[in-house]
Image: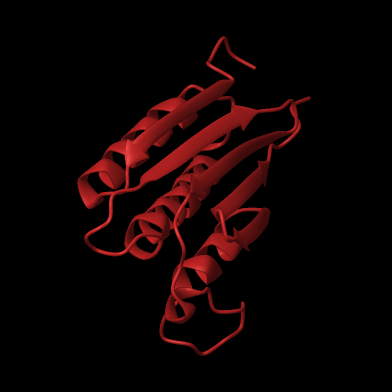
Length: 138
């Protein structure tokens, strides 16, 4: 492991311009980790989808809310958690992997991008947890 930051947390307003900013912050954080470029790009894809979903679906259009992005590194994996405090409408709940639904495909993309995806919807909000294993180094 390099001397990179191994833990980062940011909270931004749930807006499209802030989603772009969060992607840039995630990219900068991931760039400092000992992680293969392909894995780094897959994690960034999954993070982008999770953040975009929170911005688009968690809050009514006229409501203010936040999206929290937490990233941390372990010896064998990189972990990301995206959390909102909103309430997703029935029509925006994710499609199951293998589904032919026209909405909710971002969750399918997340599942295809990283090693593990866990999604928890509650009355207090939604949390998406992503995990990408690191290749062991000799």
